Length: 208
Image (cartoon, rainbow, N blue to C red):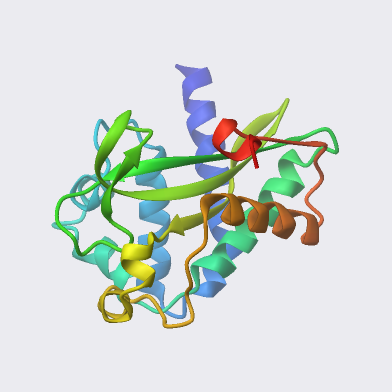
């Protein structure tokens, strides 16, 4: 029990340190607190993780505060990602590290979620109505985590500017293949001086 309690305290302290890296990205106290609650929920042993379950884990009466933080309050996700990447390099940085490219599908109903259409989902192992994200992970002997991401927008979206606008996608966003997204993320890691030796991916990227 003593060991478990020490681990919990260590995790809580380190989570606070991560939160401290980007808390200045939020201008008010409520989204700062909601961001920390959201992070705690993401690492909690919950069977399902959505707005309701994360809110319940945080002791909120409903998901409104979490939803507000994610959807309505102004903050720059890319700036927070930069903060997280610097934290990762500071703690796991290794010149022998591996960058891992992979995409995954998020099953969805309906047609309004950005990028959703019937397409192959690695999660389901077949074509489904879903969103697809392309991710870049950083792997070392001491640990691994995600350091970048892109949302794949099929031409059914990029060729329909009105549809994009309704989903909050700007007119400057053009179609990119998943391979182009992967290249951009690797180039960004190089520009940010993320130390690594190898890049690996499955055949869909390796044939490029």
